[in-house]
Length: 304
Figure 1 (cartoon, rainbow, N blue to C red):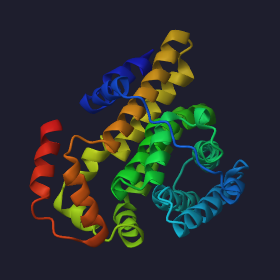
Figure 2 (cartoon, rainbow, N blue to C red):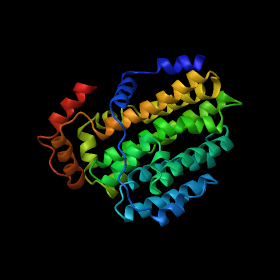
Figure 3 (tube, rainbow, N blue to C red):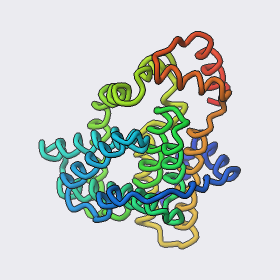
């Protein structure tokens, strides 16, 4: 029960706000679209190694990007994260490299299954946070930063806890937890390169927006990747240890509601649409920020 109490203590203002949003808003129903067999072919089979994850997701990212399909935005981030973890495993940075390989592959398979179901039009099989992320990306109306954060929210704030449960936390749980934490350091080294990649490939003005709005990333993502990963571990502990069905069901509901609410906040932040539209122009064109940033920053402060 200690894990359950730790999970309850972790419910900060951001997560409670996310749960409240989930209760008020239903995830959108994606519009019908034609399945692309060439995309299905790349995600139909389960991944069999970390190298396989990297190769196939990089190929998928390039194909999506060539078609101006904004689902590529999250993959630009994710493939680089996967490569960094792969290199860290090869360089001996983890105490349990075999577990880390299974962890990485199992985690990636959650994304693969969500993408495959969405591409096939089996929307009921797509977790709600991914339905929001994929639908928004295909719509093309959000900021590139929003597309990135929607994917991060779905994968870290929803998929990761389930992947950890699946791969197993025992035996040697403390050692596995230390390896889980070591990934934070690996990912921290990618932050500048990730932003530069998004700016180079999708939004030349993205770095201008982010540098000027110090809380921009934090406000859109609700909580940092590091804290999202810490919460995923806490949820996985409860799912692994607690045998009471009502408590397990409540934990799954909380996981779902937090991620759905996070997606709702990222997709529709409490900001005037005209401000978001102006920020979109800045992202695309490196346009002037005068008249945009003051209003946006004040509104973020009001909800933060």
